[in-house]
Image 1 (cartoon, rainbow, N blue to C red):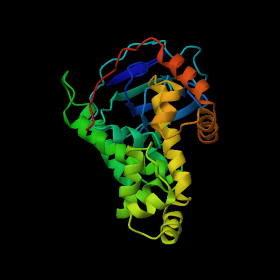
Image 2: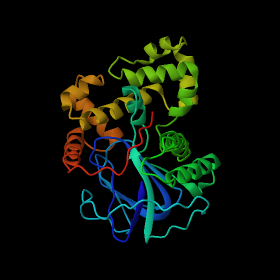
Image 3: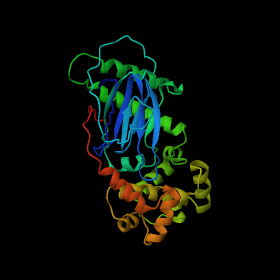
Image 4: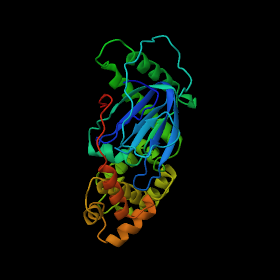
Length: 307
């Protein structure tokens, strides 16, 4: 964590890990490069905003709204934060920015698959007015970040962990997540079914087998699943399979193997479903992901593992 002044270009990209940026003071712009089916974007950030990148994507924080030509370049020097325990949050000045940055460590493959259904990045806004608890957590992060000493406070990891869960709420509010995902996960029977589908997407998940899984008749299952999840069960299975396939292709798995792992024997049928859900052909997705992964690694700003 620290402060940038003048011209800078900061990032936690290039480490093949999920990461975060919390704007402690001032303001900046987040530039995210095109990746797979996602278009490049620029987002203005102000004090109190938090960004969670759930996978390693090309990105940079800069004082300018104009995206840099090369997101892999690092500019500027991060200096230690001055102590300011009682200073209120300043406006989004572009002359300097104070940041707390680091990496996430998720425990299981199931965690990563669930996260693959979420928007990336997730941006939690301090000024949204919906997350009063997040404001309090941010104030604690700001205070801990400005404590004197060279060693980061061990509380920062736990506080950022809390901030992440508030960010998930923000994503749900924005309705960018898989339709009905969280409503399904909150229902005992449907939650266990959704987790099983996410964990084993290559299984033969027919309407009848899913109804048997939750011990319901076919008609009752379809009706209740659509009411809770907002979509037919078959659509949910396809969504999970294609999101899983996208993650496999990003990791370097071949197209035929990815198709087989998510339950497709026909590559053409897999390609059609993939493009319908992801918005791009699987081969093109894999090439773009490989190109993004070949960018030079950056120097990490700080590391606060979140468990």
